[in-house]
Length: 350
Image (cartoon, rainbow, N blue to C red; front, side, top):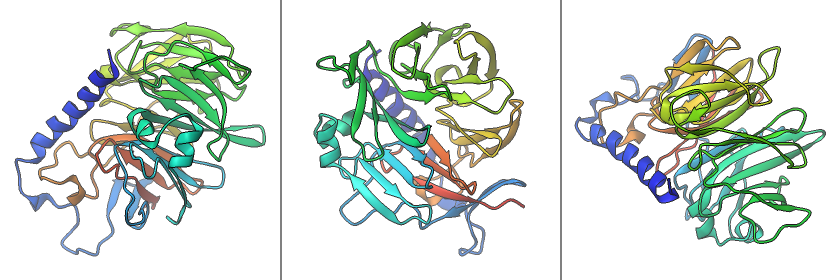
């Protein structure tokens, strides 16, 4: 399936959701009668409070469709969206904008800012030894995965490269969506908008194994959108967000099938923190599961929202596309909306 077809599907998903939003008044506004009351999601130990100051951009800059959000070891929050200005925005945990990347970053990855807009998708932050790196995943027509330093300088690129070298390798991706890196350096890549294949490479990008094809059975996927190396159990496991099939698929590090976890609403990707696995679901919520794959909480379920503008419902999600968690347990979520809506929810357990 082509990139344009997948983009159409995502827009169609939004239009379907939007049709429901148009049918009612704003009486479902998320705040209590006290307009100054804090906006909360979740309950019990999984209670979070919206920090409305986070994610603001200077005048003249704006987000596009929300792609990815990651946090580094310094609790810097790195946001990508389908925007030419900025292509990347970096905040500290208090919400202060530290820097933005646009034209210089685009040129460094061989594009104009508008070409970045057309291909932007996944981002993964990886700690390897005493260093950190970023892995960017491009949708078609880019069809690359590239590893950068923390300034955005490309160190290695894999996929549709012009020429091969010590730092670039040709590899067939039809439309990749996400990356995960294991403690031993193995790299896992899902071709989620394309072939429905899952690829494993070693730390030097030597190809080790490929599995997957379109379908609903074991070893088959319908938009294998996200991937994660789960360290919550005694044995390392690979979790795959099989979005179109509404399930998580669990594999060994060698990509041997182990089990399926059904009942998810278009899961997109993962983030592991505080002994839990956080899962943004394009179907209007965030789900948290524990180390036994049991649901701990569903957050911000916006599937029943009635109203024209999702921004009028700050305790609800429309289309969570990616998330991350900082060292203090604060949750950051970005959505597949034209304005991205990256938001911070501080952990406030009760």
